[in-house]
Image 1 (cartoon, rainbow, N blue to C red):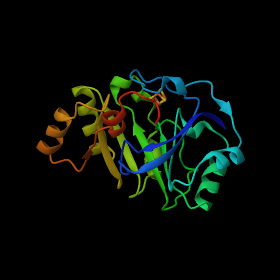
Image 2 (spheres, helix red, strand yellow; image 1 turned 30 degrees about the horizontal axis):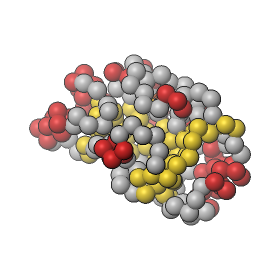
Image 3 (cartoon, rainbow, N blue to C red; image 1 turned 180 degrees about the horizontal axis):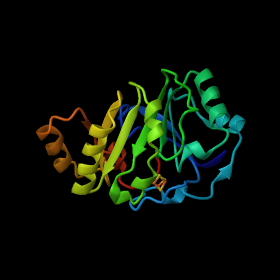
Length: 207
Ligand code: SF4
C-alpha cells in the first residue's frame, strides 16, 4: 500500500469524535477538492506492506484509515482483515467516488462516506450506488462551504433516504452557526459537528 503518514491523535470528526485513535493515512487520491486540507496526501507516499503496517500500528484500540483515498489501495481488504483479527475498531474514511462494496459488513468497521458538495468542485463524482452499502453504524458526511452546499446537502438527504447517520460539518471546521440554525429550523435528523482536531491543534498535521 502507498502510505503517507501514521500518527496517534484524537478523532476529530464524526461518530467517534474525541476518541483516541491511531491514524493510517494512505497516499494518492482520484479527486481534487477545491478546499482539500490534505493536498500532501494526494500523491507520493511510501510503498508499505500490510505486515509492516501491522508492526507500526500501536496498541490503540481505535484505528482510522484515511487518505488520500484509501479505497484505491489494492491491499486494503487484507489490512482490514488483519486489523479486525487484532481486535481493532476501525473507521474508514472514503471520498464517496469509489465503490465501497468490498468493505466488510462488520460491527467494528464504521464506513465514513463523503458526499461531495458543489463548492468542492467534485459533486459530479459522488457514486450513488455506494449508498446501498451504508448501514446504521456508518456515517454520510457533508462538508459544507456555503449556502449552495447547504441546500444541496438538504436536498440530497431528502432525495436519497438512507438508514445511516448524517453528519454536517463546515469547510475549515469552524463556522457552524448557519448550518446549525438551518438544521434546527428544518428539524433535520442530522448531527452538526466541528473538526475537533483543528480546534485543538490548528493546522498541525500530527501530535
Ligand atoms: S477527496 Fe480528500 S484527499 Fe482527495 S482531494 Fe478531496 S479532500 Fe483532498
